[in-house]
Image (cartoon, rainbow, N blue to C red; front, top):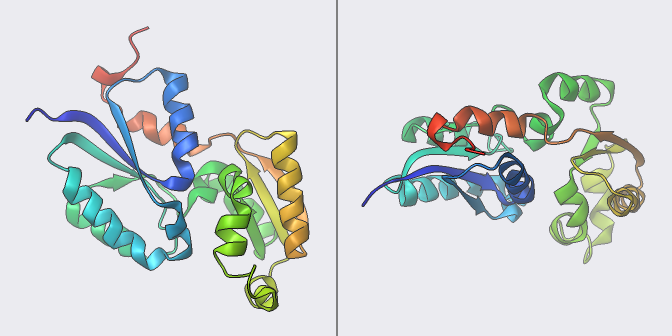
Length: 204
């Protein structure tokens, strides 16, 4: 069977942004497959899920590239990628590569006790954060999860009035101060471009 071009294995939380980068650039020969975004809440499961996906697809594509940070796996994801010979985007998490490392380091130094939101997390805050952490059933756990945070920083990829209001409501729900920084797609587009062979570049 003839191999296809490039497979991007992305976190489900990056699906919309990855598709937007691809559509804007007009690339052909790229395939995106996403692992469930809910793995954010159980990062110990990410390495095994990634290994299974790579093994499932490695004979079907010329190249595989991973759009995941370490995402709380404590280096175990990188061990899987080193063993399988697959690269990933640089950065500890999506907050870093959306903001870019220098900017993320700066805002984190300004206030280390920050809870970060992206467009995806704003849109799915109730399901992934409130329900995902069981706070809808046990609101008394809120201080345990968020008592040490000082602010919510919304890293906005494509901000809108609706998303900004939702982000502010999320901060209020958590009892935290609200701030926003427009990042666009940051290093996501740059990293994808580096992985695209010349043959897959736009023809138009």
